[in-house]
Length: 270
Image (cartoon, rainbow, N blue to C red; front, side):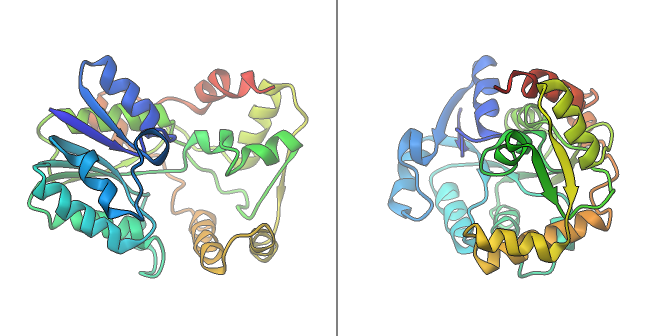
């Protein structure tokens, strides 16, 4: 059985590839840097899917690509999908996160086995230069979150859950919400990272209007800024605040704590 990991060099894909290979599975990485896989070029999909029986699918931004890819995958012989989505995505207005919603619907309609995982914010978002790391290293993280806590999920837990779902029976038709074991505010998370890294870092609360203006000024499109504004509004409303037991349902253990992520990754920041 060959398992295709779309986005296999990314935050969840990379640990998933490692986890699967450690278990002796045959894995094919589908990413632009590793194999030339490109969501905007449909002629690059066939090589990724040739001989594959299962796919870990990180949804493309363009919703129509998700349906086309899933149809091509099932025609190529793929019989199982695990889709990385987002927590409570079905509670957002239809104009937001269309790629994820389309990927969920495409696998539901595919006739193949499918499982959907909907995680909270990744702990590793704090380590990602394209998200929050650069601001943290510069000494200040400014977001419109308020004092609502979030149970951040470790990418390694997502990878281990996905590995089980891709290789084990009994999960067809299931939607698992994945979170960390406890919720903490962004201010507390930043304080923990400051202590571990030895840096002076502060969390600053800003208004949604200030954040949106900063996004657009940094080059984000109005569409992307509106989508992130909707996401943060949901977070301020507490939509993601309660820990969920998806990791325990699949793995039979508690998820990794945020302190584990901090000790493993943040303490090594230079």
